[in-house]
Length: 306
Image (cartoon, rainbow, N blue to C red; front, side, top):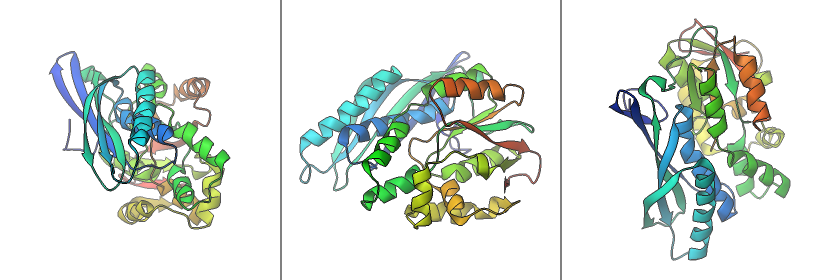
């Protein structure tokens, strides 16, 4: 499983009972604190393995660092934050690679394991399934506000806490109820990733915008027009797949398209077990987890916003 479909990671079967999952992800800083950035970048990179139901086991650092412009102590703090998050995930750091770069970037190449018959992809959503989102949206918008000097310390602390939260437990819980499909919400935003799930599964998805969790601060900033540049390209690319069954405010549509870093899991699960999963996710600390939609038959490949 790899390039033929837009999935979260590559999967290579080694035996009838064992496959490896491989992914790589690195980002530029979205918070100012180096240690926090390291934690967030690690959580973000590990997420693709969790989205496919796998267990990450090893990782390698990917470092681009401006040695002439920044003190090496900053890099040490980034790596310390990342290592703390890897320890939490029970992942072993086995190496990495660094280059001199004018712009700071950091992330991980991650290898995980899974049973070949237990891989969760974007292609398995079934008609009648309910969709759960495990983290609030709006992180890209808040990060943009932070860069503009408009996000206060309380908002930054809230943002950091959510971004540094692993999707580990959420992944384990979705496996326990035999989830049909999943994707982690990252650079294509909720609507972009939902479009991929609808296309890959050959279904349509109804999304209830009034139940989607988001940062209240993101709404305030979106109303001010503080949107990340990537949001506009995602909106342009996927707008033809969006149908409106009700009125959606412009700022809310921006949040739904907002590119996320270390976002939550979008899980497609049988309606018979959705309430159980919702309760267990909230107990596990994903406090803003919500049921946000339903998988329907037609119009195939479309997202209907309610």
